[in-house]
Length: 293
Image 1 (cartoon, rainbow, N blue to C red):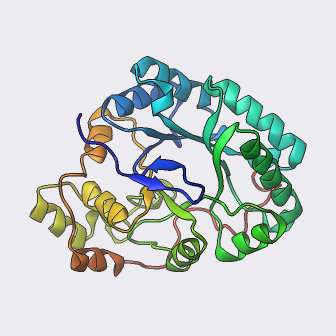
Image 2 (image 1 turned 90 degrees about the vertical axis):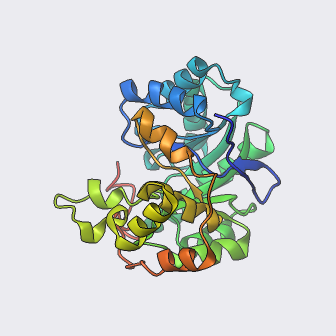
């Protein structure tokens, strides 16, 4: 595929592909072919995490793709049970070994822990050391509110390059986006097409699924695209970095086929207006070491 994702320049000058593949909930057996398919479809950003249990398979998928690993931007994340300075350094070594890489492109703290900000800050200071040592090219956080980020930045030296959060047309996180932008932090979006509203509930419905929203489906018909492609295009128009997850080859390719059309400002605003303010995933204020151990 000749199309390439646009690049986003992070606050330390590193360039990151805007669109990537996420592998949350991808089994080890599914992950290898998904990563291989994605890279052969044009993706150059792969997002995993220690907690996903598939770092080894991400590395294997990269190797099987035939794409040189120097061309692939790889992200993984520190899990809560490894928070703390020394334990973070050990966890990073484990992740790097699992991936089979000699450095990492982006290392993220997976969740804020409001009940133990000292441990969170210690982990971030360890990430700062990894950055200074050249073992990682950029560092950041996930699921962080302006209050979380403010508390962290008061205790550390380097402004996060990325804040990866739940964000889709039904949960647009305006306050987080505004704060990130003011600080020069890229907002990266997990569950960008609203999948969290399907897999985190026992009774999904059209009312909670942006893929079935009339505004989105009308735009899909107008442009000859799928609803998912329209939503991913909205993310890109807004300057976000979406990381949709799929293990289906046709869906992986489809999600990358979003660079041959654009939405008008009015269409982007119409999707903005779909926000319900309702989070589909875990409440970031309730996450703690004990509840996620």
